[in-house]
Image 1 (cartoon, rainbow, N blue to C red):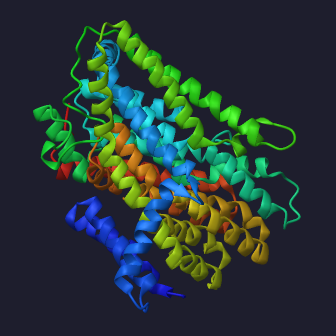
Image 2 (spheres, rainbow, N blue to C red; image 1 turned 45 degrees about the vertical axis):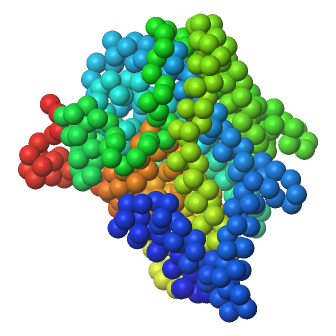
Length: 523
């Protein structure tokens, strides 16, 4: 059944409820129920069929075709493992020791935010991995400088996906390059998919300037909207999260240090996690590659979920060994493992709900409807890059998936460019990639957004509402770049125009902070 514009009802309803009620699970649940009801409307037993479909989708997250659904299930297991590792590191005093060590070297709140951003940039292998690892590593020194967890989540989220989409040797890069290769097969262009990806990267104005904005916000202290409220509360009270909103993913009162820790108690587990995950990404990539195992082919065929699970298990073994070496008892370790598991349950619930509504949105055809609108539109082709940016953004915002948006919109953008003006092919593909990240950053049902909240230890709704103003500002700035790119076809001119818009935005934000907010939150 073709729902047409009605296919927008479930995602838009869920998004509106999130903003109004600030209850993520309730809002996603309503969206799931409404979407499933729409799909089963007209059946003999609509209520039973609706419930059956929802339970079937949730069940398929764990079991698919009679076997374990390794992608979803392994991601959930990795979350549990990460919670266990974090809890044990806290029990051994590793987090506190690292915080003390970092505090002696990172002297300011700005410095703490800079270091957090740099960690997010350096871990570009995969967005899930970056979101969770960068947040956990940054927490000790970020907390010591009273940087709110919402600010940390924004820093992590705005560097994770943005870097992954710019770097070819990442799970994102490999996925995108395979799609580009299929598009280029229908053209007479004389460059490879890898070359095309590298040429597109400077045109991804949203990703580039989202990263720059993180540093500008930290350096100029551009705390606006809900972010200002969280930062003020953190500085004035020392409370980094609103405890009235319930438990925070990754935090637990049961993991206070039991012994005097060392920095190595944190560094060894994290280093093992990074090294083992990258190792298993390479191993699974080689196993999944037919023919010559080039570096690009390895990352194209790697099993990200499996690598995360195997890397997490390896790191957990090292962490447990360190805990026993620090003279923790078996009971202490058991308490830590259970506390770490419980701390990740809120994030797991939200992820399951987000995946469920994503499946329903896919069946209703929300993405197909939005893609059909842009494909059937007739306009000046110079406007196509900025239009595609906006449409990809809205699609990713509505569906909560940038990867799904890539898969639908990149081929459509390629078809439109080939049929109108092939010189606009790369700008239009860049616009889709940029718009997908933009929508992903704005969407409360995005799994990357959820995992960034989890890694940073922030309430998910706090992260969504504090990041939204910055994402919208960068979205407007990127639109200027794509508009100029569409009319001039010159990447350098478009970059200069985007940089000019970015500079004006920073000046404007400083005026807002100083005149309307009464100055920065800290001197």
